[in-house]
Amino acid sequence: GEDVEQSLFLSVREGDSSVINCTYTDSSSTYLYWYKQEPGAGLQLLTYIFSNMDMKQDQRLTVLLNKKDKHLSLRIADTQTGDSAIYFCAETPGNTGKLIFGQGTTLQVKP
Amino acid sequence: DVKVTQSSRYLVKRTGEKVFLECVQDMDHENMFWYRQDPGLGLRLIYFSYDVKMKEKGDIPEGYSVSREKKERFSLILESASTNQTSMYLCASSQVITEAFFGQGTRLTVV
Image (cartoon, rainbow over all chains, first blue to last red; front, side):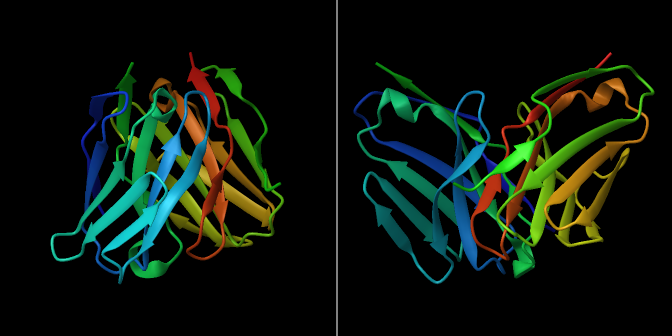
């Protein structure tokens, strides 16, 4: 079946690194995604990784993909208070275009 | 600037009412989605449409129906609203497996 799991909450201090983890069950997705939701807003695509890659870096963001363990992580370097948000991982099982999300991880950044 | 527009930000309806949530996108996307977002449960897919007049059930379709008569518009219908349908409803659109764009959400309260 299609299932995406995340821990619900992460708290870090400003300037530290944050690591948000996600596990998924369907291995057929061509892309895996990280979306960010700021308070009172809809979701926005933060970054994504192609399924044949192990790592993708984009400025302060690093995505790691372990296909064997079906584990995806998002690392945010030098976390800022503006990074406080809910982060969702997502996949498209069977590449049908259907987009399945995890529960979302609330990132709290303390000054 | 790409846009997904949901007709209302806030709605209050009575139990048993028929409720229509409207979503319009201006990007000529094939795929459109309706999700509901509840704390601790993340985004759960209600219905998904991959073409005009085509629809597919998501994880929680019970109590809901959808309509897609034109490519740009995807409507979610609550046939007889109940209090357990009080939630945040998010609409999204995408091309096949690329970035999904979200509306701002409709917070529906059923009393």
